[in-house]
Length: 249
Image 1 (tube, rainbow, N blue to C red):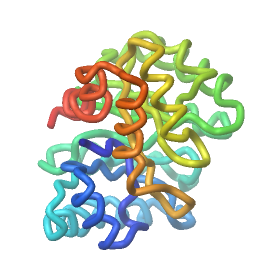
Image 2 (tube, helix red, strand yellow):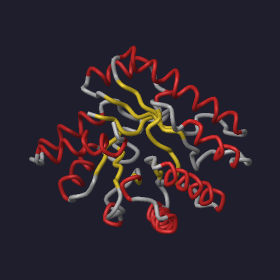
Image 3 (cartoon, one colour):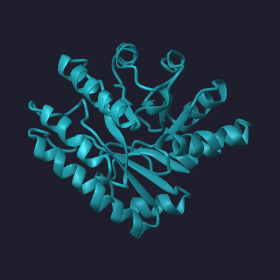
């Protein structure tokens, strides 16, 4: 299994070990906003930590950790343009597999511009990008994201739109769909029902962070998928193959 979206920098080493024991082979840890992201240097330090310390912690725990470099819509400095210039410098690193987490949250003009700039980098460097959708106003944000994607004209296989649910999964046809298995977002039972009902390019993740989340989210969802009698190939795609393809692992 591949946990396709986590924030390991706020999780314990024991969590990594237990995920490895539960059958998680690879973990993608993405940029987020664990602190007040008041100046660009905070992000630069975070990216350095993810690439160096989190990858190292993964090796010790016997699980492969790869990294996403990006600027999150829930926290970014006023002079975020500097970070747009810095992102390409990280993309040649062997442990960086995507740009993200980016996206829209409050739908402010700055967020929209920030997302566009990161999409253009992803397009130019042919780098996968992970796009956040919010809990509130999810449909409104998703429709705006789809509009921006059409404007940027990025290849569809470079995009994963994350945190979708029963109300929004129907709206996405061309891109990878991230399902976040977390008590605040989707239970394993709900995620399994979505996967059974639709034939789309699903990628499952736990979105581990500082709020309530479950290091066993993926194994629990796998069990629910088996209970529902979902085809083994479909299970394997949602838990492993689609993420491997998207992140080019």
